[in-house]
Length: 310
Ligand code: PBG
Image (cartoon, rainbow, N blue to C red):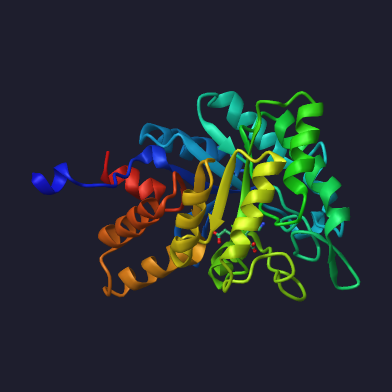
């Protein structure tokens, strides 16, 4: 009892944003091999899945599109196309469940034939030419009713431009959760399997951060704060608890952390082998992320947490 009384950190389903993958088509529920119990859903089945997750008490979701290879091009033009299934799905989900909080993904990689978050010219990522594409994508998502825009691309200056363009278009109430300190991590592998979005050439080191750097996270956070971000994200979470703590101690904005696909896959792989206990390991991980200072956690464990703690 005394142990409970003086417990400092409490997890609740309200702390989580549950990532979901959507694919065009009907009656599709494809498991992602490196992410057990995580699926690519078509909209019809996703609406049913959302209903069951809402019943379990999960209120916030982030949606990622898996785009057909034929629709990808150098300019990611499908990302803001009026027939884009992802944009149409956002509108349908918000119409069906207006009370949930829905967050988007803004980056070129799901739509880019180069598999990069920014525009590639002669093997280089061109930061400034990427920005208008990201902002068109954001406006299309805002029009569809998204609550939080999630720029995961790490281009410089995108938060400011997106904020400006959203405001000019009348979307002052649409928030921005900036992927502020996003590291060039090996832990994103299973996610890239899920979206078939791995870079076709090169790596993401010219725009994602060096895992060796911590002070740089302060610079990124200051820029995003000044540009009008509403949340600052650290990604991945578990190897970067010190960075979460650093941002929480130095900034007043809510801090989020992305407990990424590789962190999910590791616990599943070990528990499948009988080497780790699934329920206690994933809950201890989530607790440590919150204890480090995260106000919000994007995690594939959200549904299992909600089930266990219902
Ligand atoms: C890319 C993006 C990535 C993730 C979210 N958005 C991968 C990457 O940067 O290559 C990773 C999420 C995860 O691993 O769970 N825009």
